[in-house]
Image 1: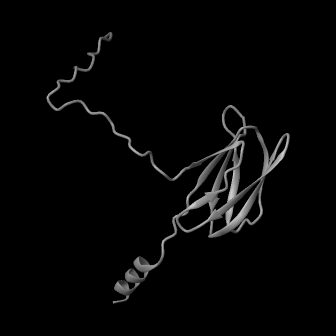
Image 2: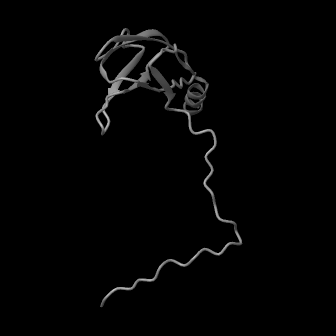
Length: 128
């Protein structure tokens, strides 16, 4: 009976699915600070080419906050609102926003027709 009650409580509890975002700047990012760290995390990502233009935003709870971005030539502020199922970033010139959690709209792997005969794999031509 306890297992049944616990299962019912877990299944009926609200599920929070926050959206993670990737923010790409037009110019390199020097540092990133979040006004309220209990609402979200924002971390710059250093890529192989070391351009330092990407920031990953990971929400923690509902609310509104600001991200202060220190670019090498100026400082910018992004306003962010986080709901249980949606993250809203106020559009700002010089930045592009991409949701990390959304899969591609339509990705179909092309398969050969069922009646098509595939070529044989190459035969090994080695030494002894």
